[in-house]
Amino acid sequence: MAVAAPIETLERPDAPYDLTDEQADEWWAVVNRMPADWFPRETHGMLAQYCRHVVSARRVAQLIAAEEGKKEIEIPVLDQLYKMQEREGRALSSLATRMRITQQTTYDKSKKKPQQVSKPWE
Image (cartoon, rainbow, N blue to C red; front, side, top):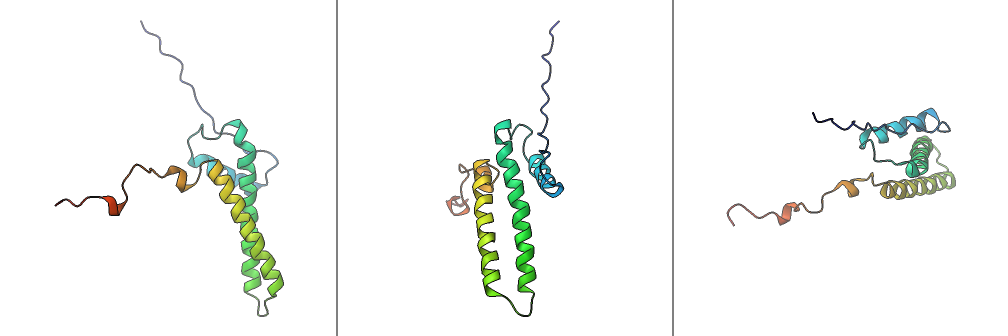
């Protein structure tokens, strides 16, 4: 009689305890969208930082909306907020690319683009 090998179960990594509730929610949103083994231990620091940047970017966007909603906009304040927003965006893009969680990394380059598809009558 053949004996089946035990099935290995993969657990998704827990959010670090030093994340805020909102950052931990972001952690779980990302972790649950990817395969269970997508984030090995050595990437947890990057993922935690990514979650912090997501929440920071959200806060900056809220501040920008509040400033833009004022009757008298303070240009220096708004300019500083735009710079902060751009910095957060760059950090998010860099971390997401390195962890391979962007659309770019899930896009199958072997598939033909619409303009490369031959027409049925050709």
